[in-house]
Image 1 (cartoon, rainbow, N blue to C red):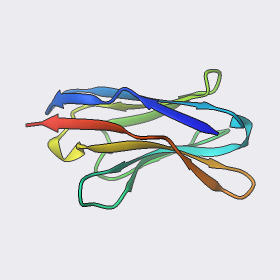
Image 2 (cartoon, one colour):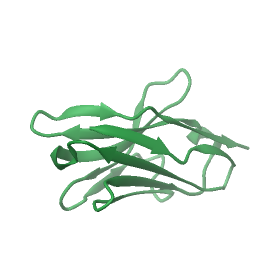
Image 3 (cartoon, rainbow, N blue to C red):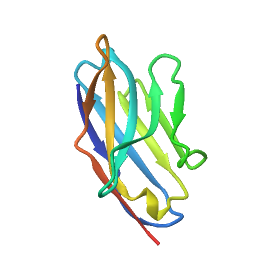
Image 4 (cartoon, one colour):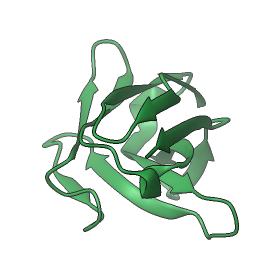
Length: 117
């Protein structure tokens, strides 16, 4: 599976951005997809995750109520709508896909999100 992110950029606090992740290749094997982020000097952390099939979602506490994850199966694309952005949301955001049957993880190249105060 190949994953290509887009939609990052710079925004002021309170603003919005939408990230996209286009998947290609063995997309039929995808069990779940998610967004992770890594800020300078910090570990990569889960932001939001969505499963295949019933599309159940879960979010990091820090983004609940502000971010929304979704996917368009017809386009093999996942989205992250980010509203009410805060400076602490500044990070490189990575798209992740987890593939069956061995739950192997695939990553995109990352896209920078910068939120200024």
